[in-house]
Image (spheres, rainbow, N blue to C red):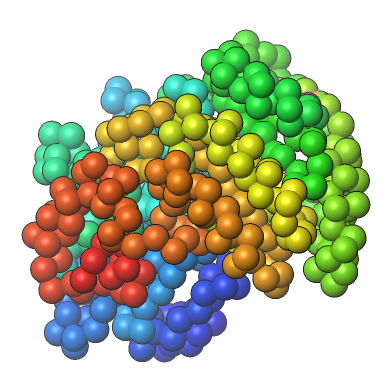
Length: 439
């Protein structure tokens, strides 16, 4: 794809390969001033504007036929405030670069998702999260935001400055403006001990409340067509560091989890009848292991096998029943599911359109290998999730619209009213936002 400040355009595709767009022009601003000028120019030309990061959303949230803003020149740390324990970073900075830079400074985010390829603004704007009993999404760690609004002005917000914008823009869906910088809360670098262990699904569901309560970060992967899971418990540690050995890490994280898994999915896609047998083998491929390392090396993993994903947040107290219904649906259906189902949690937060807004939540994510038909599986799963008042991840496949979302988000109209004020002419509109937020 061609993307330059000169305005050349091409076809944009997301990471999952299920969304494409044909912007009229593309802009790669090197400063906030250049970005603001690009927004003003688009408005004068009657073109819509969307900013796009690394394309890790499976929805068309970043797609546009107008002006596509590529923030890859807006990168790096602006400031570290050790008194306030914050870091201010340019919006186009990839999370992997932020994590490495913070570690060099002896600092860390409190929690993060399971990959770190996304830009900080793309990850936070769509509600990217990890798992945590007490610590919430990446957006919940934001202490300040800078964004360019529809009239080309630069707006800063925090709990004290423009607090109504701050409440919403931390997960703003690209609907309120283009984020140009983010200030995160950080803390001194710490160690996590990870315990990864296979466990029967029946035991995980029976003991879920205990596993959640006893661990700072608990998650598990259930392999459809089996009664098996792989669990992961991350807790703070006094050390010493005991990272995964280089050879072991390559064998388990690259060869098994990516290389062999890729081949298994190729086979499953070509011959769906083999999927249950492959699932049984996959569920037994990884053995128990324990290691201790700095946070981002524990929280995140390489994800090289491409897929399409749907994820819903349900009330935490509903997660076990929801999973039982999901398993029953898969068991009685002709579906052949080669990807594990991922389950994580988050505490309630105060962000207007956060999937955990106002309620303790559990996340259930279903995946299908790229190029495999996914609609039948996702439709059946979505029917179960929505029966439990599930909230779809903004960056992952779903079919919900304004009518449904306004029911499951108590502060939905607060967000749309703010959007009316900041973007009355819908400069940042696209088909996705029209569906989920209304025209």
